[in-house]
Length: 141
Image 1 (cartoon, helix red, strand yellow):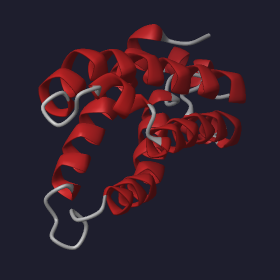
Image 2: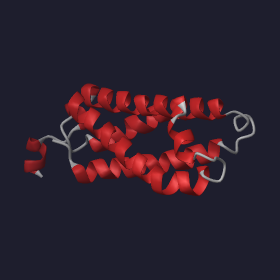
Image 3: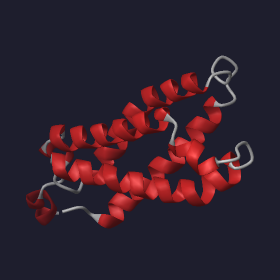
């Protein structure tokens, strides 16, 4: 069962990390000239970010693929809400006539969404008891 409090923590932290990393990438001289380069750099960095955050999440939750998928889905929902109230109005709307359409019609955004879902599902499937505090261990402490 999804631990909502921890999953919300995962989601918020993931969104903040995306915001910081993409903001940095946008100013790197060898990357900033191309939105595709920024996206590819983020996708590469997204792999360890998601797996490390998923390791933290599954430290106290039993991992399985369904739990991982739900974790990724919640992260997408939270991220979308934050993008709708922060990212798009404050950053995208100044550059576009149709900011919401432009933001969500970009194929690179959807690749990032799919990668997040694939990585969280994989983490839930792959992580085993070595990353999870067992009930027996907790009862002895």
